[in-house]
Image 1 (cartoon, rainbow, N blue to C red):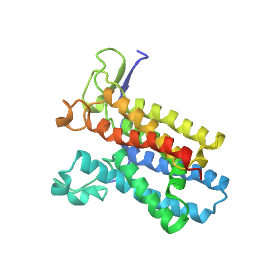
Image 2: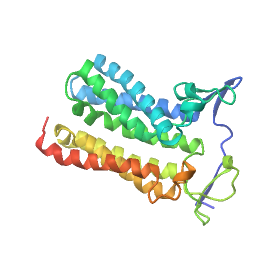
Image 3: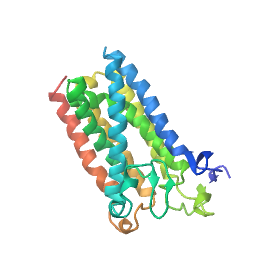
Image 4: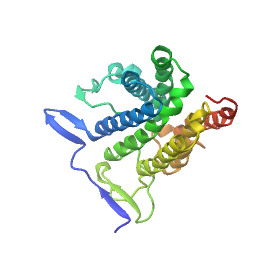
Length: 273
């Protein structure tokens, strides 16, 4: 049936030797940073900034976003790792109950956003020396397409799946040992983020809103986490104990970002660059 897809990839990545695997999820992160680099290259060229500043931006972005995403996941969803397997928080390996190369998995978008803000603050203070809102207003464009890549990576891993559709529509995730269709929540989210990216891209290149300090960042917060809030209604709980809450963890964490985003958009009218 056209509206039903059986998702049964033969592997999670490329097996090189022994237990070492380059995961598709990791490749999607690499793609995200690569595409982001070239988008920022075009933006820096438009802003008449040097290549040296761009190279430093990439280093700060990779470290800040990856570290923030990992810590965000552990703090919000898997805090027991601080006690049971501390080194696995920062390294692409699992040490308990046995040693295994896992790649960088278990990354939270809310933590990534916080990591991005912190790293851009440091980058601006030490390297760029403009305004932290100036760089954040521009870096959100590649970050939004990066969010698309990450959700596609989640689909490859058959993780963050949606609820059963109770119909013939949906995706059957064979990796989970199931024979019934679910909502592909990862793809819903990725599709929504594509629109966020296109809106931000249009806003930067075709309007003067990037000259209103904080507008682009606010638009990113409001739209991206608005998408996340809605899609969470279709997704299975990531931790069992939150299932009966009125709003799940992802939605509760999204609300402050949406509020801050709307505030920044209104505030930007009084703070041109």
